[in-house]
Every structure is written in C-alpha cells, then in structure tokens.
Image (spheres, rainbow, N blue to C red):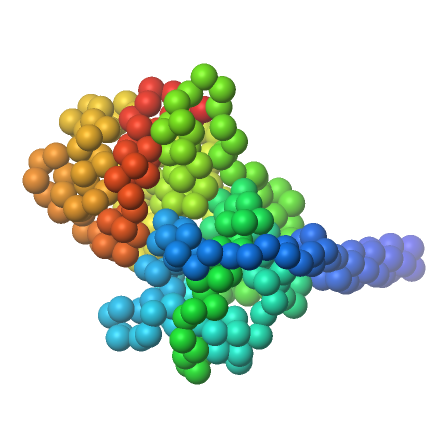
Length: 299
C-alpha cells in the first residue's frame, strides 16, 4: 500500500512538473525589428487579399472597420475576432512592428501566448518582411476605436491556451506557397495567393477531431462543418470542371459573386467576394483561377 502511495505521489509530481514546464515553454521566434519602409497601398491590398476586413468588421452590428467582435462558432466554443484598430488599449495601437510580425506569421501574441488557429497565421507564415512592413503601414492608418472585442467562450479544456502549444507541435504545417519549377508565373502567383494570403483551404478543407485541416488527404475537398453551420464545396480541379467551371468563369465569379449557372454566392463566400476578391486586380483573380483549375493544383 505504501509503495502504491509513493508511486502515485511520484506520478502526480511528475505530471505537475510536466504541466508547469509546458505552460512555461516559450513559443515563437525572438522579436526582431524589420527596419523596412512599408507601403500603405500595398499593405491595404494585402489586407483585402488576406480577408482582414471581412473577419474583423462586424457589419451586421454596424461596428467600425476592423474593430472586431465578429463571432466564430466552433465545436470547441465561440471566438470573437479582435480589434485591429490603432486604439492602444483595445486594439493594436500599443504593439511594435516586430510584435505584429510575430503575431501574423507565427500566431504568437505580444505576451507570448498562442493564438487559436481560427486566426489563419499558418497561411501567413510565408509573408516576406516587406509584406509585413506594408501591412503594418496600412494598419497604422486605421482610426482608433476604443471598443473591446468580446472575450472568447471556449469550453474546458479548450479554454486553456497553453494546450495550444501541444496542438502547434502536432498539427502546425508550413504553407504550400513555394514556387514550382516549370509552372507559369500566373500559376505560381495563384499558388502563393490560394495557399497563402487568401487561405482558401481554411474553409474548403475538412478538419479532424482537433480542428486541424486534413491537408494530406482532403485538400480542397470541401467541409460540412464550417462555423455557424455552413458548408463549403470542393474546389479541386476535377470537381470544378465537372460542375462546369473554367478559369474564365472562376475569375469572373471572384469579381462578381456570380456562378456559371447564374446563381450568386451567399453566406461567407459572398462576404469573401464582397470585401476581398472583388478588390483584387484582374491579373490576381486570373492567377487564382489558373491555379485552382490546373489538374495538379496541389503542386
């Protein structure tokens, strides 16, 4: 009996020490100033490409642009997009450019905490220093809004953010944005946009029990469990072709929201077009369509 007690006590001590170590385990790279001059226009364009406006503006409640508060219902609880205005208390006005870079590319807050993967930082990981500088310059022009977003409402144990460190260790993969030799400039530009900034797979790829994308087996095969009960269709080459799409009609739909059948995109895809892809250049919409309509779009 005494031996069992000692073993149990030792196990509890080891578990407590391991938990304390996990909670103290630092994540993210050291903060490094970029020392680059950003371009506001390029940054604003990249913000549109990346979906920042749609995700961080609660149009339904008439909130100011980028003031956050948009609800994202997940199987693990409800998240609310943060305030990205220059307000120093409720927004990012108190951040440094280096903290902004780490948040966007690594999903790590200024305090060193992991962000929930609803923030698509894994797609933004390939942003160059210049792209980060451009984004930063654009966000500095956003008027401050002294309104806090709502606290997240996650169920236990998903409300313990230290657990995200384990999630990152198991499921965090680099984006598939590297150029592919032998492909056209338009195809590779489309790859960079689709697999990176536009993060199409975030909605058009199913997720596993832990909320991680099934990228190896169901990339672009659609999802039946989007936030708010929405579904997304498959957007792989074969499915799109079978349903009557081609590069021209897809590029047109990204500008207008109108499908080849004459229907209009609704739900979250309608917002993607309205606040994002409709602002892209024709060249970039064509690049996205070129990539998605290619038989080997997975690269």
